[in-house]
Image 1 (cartoon, rainbow, N blue to C red):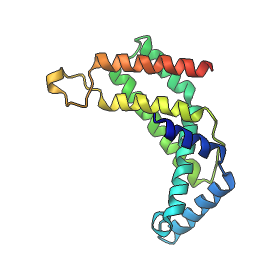
Image 2: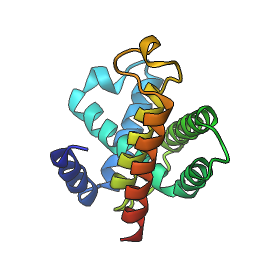
Image 3: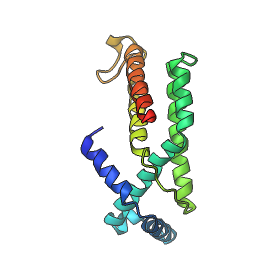
Image 4: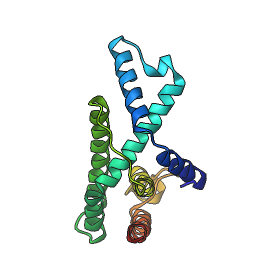
Length: 168
């Protein structure tokens, strides 16, 4: 992950304003009831709300880390194959996205955890691996795709880095 982006995310996390986040959610909901969109009404407010939603999404990765870690352990112990791992991993991420939408629509805010940024970065790396994994032989894969052996190697590398991070 880009160091500058990580620094920016840490700065945003340190300056998280729950009251402002709530104001933006209410404003967005009010506009929706009028048939309008915060995106169309105020690009600045829209981008700020988007930033807060991304923080909440990263925080949910952190809150559900035990489920991700259990899944990773099952994969590392070869209890599940790559296809099952990727399907379950991506579904877990979709559930987090749905939870963010539900929390936002019900005006429920969580305070982001400091470790949520790095943890979600690791999950993003794994998600990217799942997105480009293709079990076909090399001549049949696209240039951006990776095979199962490379996938296994990359996930192992991420897993060990993640373990080190969690021990800190």
